[in-house]
Length: 292
Ligand code: ADP
Ligand code: MG
Image (tube, rainbow, N blue to C red; front, side):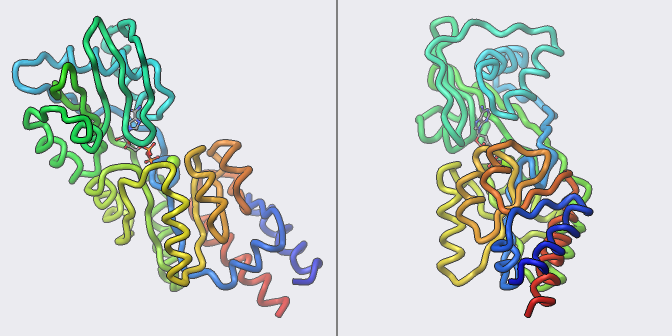
């Protein structure tokens, strides 16, 4: 690539809120085959809200929310923030929690009023041998609607679930359509449940959904696609996404994201407008065409 053409390309990008770090990423955009989007905070706004609280039989809804609030008050997860907001809006205060543990990609654990409590996805409940109290069926119904379900357990059994919804960004569907029209393969990667991921995928026109991927395994999934011969762009926003952004041939951080994600990426989109993704790719492509 001639330095001048690259400079023109990066300059044009900046005018459209697309920051391109160097010439090397432009070079790869020319051969791109696949775009992988992180779900939470990238395809979706990353502002989940509690939609329903479903207690197990014989449990008061208040009890489910209170236990969840006490556990999540100590967590930094975006889902935790939503649960805390809901609890506080309901006039509840978190109870002191001891031995708090954040379980990456799964949930949280603590002892509250002498009772061992666990909160997180179905996988965690099964892994820890919790009695499901029929709440797994309730969870799959909501997951099929694209909601994220958080189960709450106390002393070995699930006492209820909290469903949350995180709305897709307005630009997501059009961005996906544009990439597909350009002949690119589009996939979603998420730590969330398979049916939740697939439901969101259906809304946005993404059929390839890599779900229940633990934060530490996202980079490995990108490398697996590369081993298949794909040239991969990864679009992400969070701290969890940094290794995957680095592994990808082109890492694209969205501007609303964390500094860590921006640091790990080749291209940064200044806004949350996902249509900047096809724009950035097209720009890179055009720049390289001029050079060749
Ligand atoms: P994503 O890949 O969508 O950004 P994460 O890897 O952070 O998601 O989390 C994956 C799943 O783990 C969540 O969908 C949720 O079910 C569960 N989880 C992890 N931490 C928490 C928490 N603090 N509160 C509730 N659920 C959690
Ligand atoms: Mg994310």
